[in-house]
Image 1: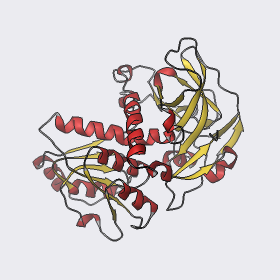
Image 2: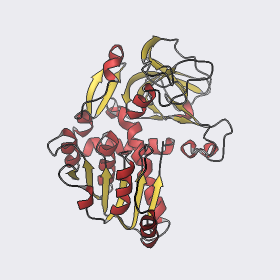
Image 3: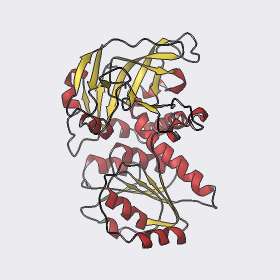
Image 4: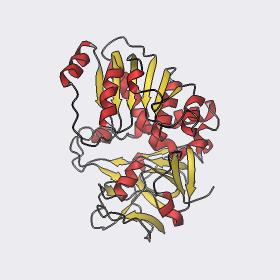
Length: 358
């Protein structure tokens, strides 16, 4: 079968290989992959920044954003039928099966020895067929047969939103009304939609013009789009109850701390490059204390957020027709993998590779 692979830590080793169809165990499902999504994590792996091949293998099959159909079912698997539309989660439990992993929270793994499909020690889903433990697979309705590939990026903000509410509502009476999303890539657009579904007034900030596709999709949800080339972050009101920081820029992350209001929460969802800043840390921490504010980071998502995300993805599809479809701006075949994984233009939002055109 065809599989899009890299040699981890070897720069520009991306290739299309012919590999064996995986054999499944009694607890696994064989997946016939329909399509996979591409994100910055994939491009970082291709650039050699990180990535780990499975034990005894010198290559890693890419792809952690996926949509598949069930092709074969292990003898001890229940609740699935051939042809079911499914999405597997990304992370798997550590070998030690720590407290969080054995509680269904591999996204909160204590040891750091977790494995991740398409990223760390497990092959991903950028192949004609793939396998997954059945306990980490969620079913989708047929109405998401074309757009379910967006479920994994949605879970990033699904988890951030849920945990934001848990944090503050366990501390105080809290009724947020105003949110800020920093970044208007795929996760930023989906995060905006999730917050709008929760009835919040949302400002979404990015560097594209107000006429761009990203801006139009943000505004379709009823949120306000702000072009930072025209309006600086410093000009925004520091009264946001919730801030999702998605840019991965340390300087913007620091500014986010200044924009959150009293009793507010900043959720950091980016990966930040190291750099030296000359900000006044004392003032930052004093403001944090005096304002009863919460700053926290969130990564990955467990099955709970995937299951919840299925309903929210369907609601976005129904509430704002065309929004999810327009997010997919490039569709390529596996044979055109080099084009698919090449840098996107400023106007591209989400690129997918279609293994099955259905």
